[in-house]
Image (cartoon, one colour):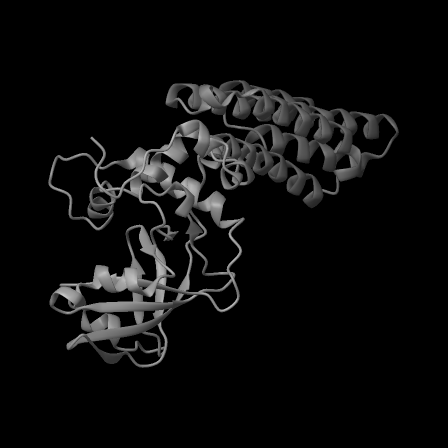
Length: 340
């Protein structure tokens, strides 16, 4: 049975909405956002504020999907000029450290949970409880700008005609000016004017899915950068440029060939990680041997001092200066020293 005031919407219609198409929302994101606009928001926010009972579900996947959808919608939500949104709070005293300026002159705090706001002041008044005589009714008046716009999820709402701008967790709230009191229907109402800074650090589902692969790409880049720096320090960049390019290509191939469903499994990630390390090591050994060969060429030309320097660099590199410590490496260093 449909709860009075709530609406029924087909998932296909939500997927076909202009906002869903523009933001490239996924089905799970739409479902999670839709759930938030109903009574489930109470449970999601209780968890985010640390109020969940021990052993109860954390709704981690659902909350992540909501945040992912908000991150996408935020990119395409253009705030009307002069927009003010409101948030009503009742039955809750704001802590003194929220209201008192810190050593830098700022007052406010951070909302740990999802934060609903509305451009309709009357809706916020209802949530404040001022009209029914609830204790400590408060309204946040929020100035909206390009860096402080929430996602417009009105088209997803379970309640027809409800206009809602939703903010992701960890939104920073800064008090502007001095809070004031108003009398509404004979009851005192606290008005706190705010400026927001939206949390932009949360990842979308797609970013999360590829985060491990991105970290492997960073690993490959750092491994190659170490070799390049070593070559630069030893004035061998020109001599070794082609081989370092082959190393970079080989490392990138390992990263490109790693499929998301493989690296998002811990054992799969370990396997790909090991392959990248081994590929790097193979090319480091090749580079050390190339330097040794260059030393032999210099010696054959009668360039004794240049040959000695190249031999020293190659021995140091084949040891632990560039390559990993191993029995094969130590044996090769002994062999090189004997030849010198």
